[in-house]
Image (tube, rainbow, N blue to C red; front, side, top):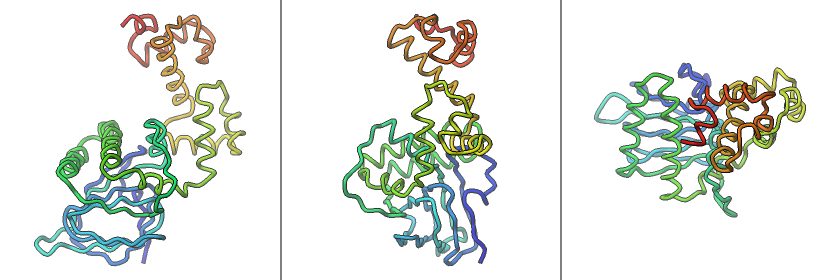
Length: 279
């Protein structure tokens, strides 16, 4: 039996950390070998689903949905009795986006939690409405999907934390490869430091070409653009919250002269640094 690679085999043509797909089929499958290259919410709409992974096996009907950790699993999908199609809304997200969410919301690590590869959650009215929103988003252009799915991911995670606790989050990241974490830590630690790509690649124990490839894979951006955006965002903080003058910070942000800094800031925010302060 061939291995199904998700989300790759869905031909979504998107390099985003988030993807959505309205999966429908009239063919049942039994213990299909599936390799998940991203974490996934499988919002079951019609049919029955059974999944076997390294540590967990779960069987659900359409009153529940699944959260599955990236990795290998065996998947059985059974058609419903009343209609001909099995249907599940698939919402993919990367480990990097999960780590960013944890850092942004300062979620504290719990001491004891069950390390599962699959979680089953029951629908409620809020979650049913949420899934209908995902269906609508799946019909939009990829550019709009990318922007909206990031917001929808944060909305969903906040809701699940408040209603189900945080165990599922730390179970998802419990076995993230240490080299991957090392790579992310280097980027996040040095996002405001003026290091070259060559220097960052050296710290990551990678060649320059491998570093660039891994960077674009995890951050969906070139290193130069990503670091520039982060430094300009820091500049906006210094201007507004610390009342710093543009002439005081342009070198700190990584620009050789004030005029280049002003132009880059205006391109990103639509106003000059001085106008931004006065707004």
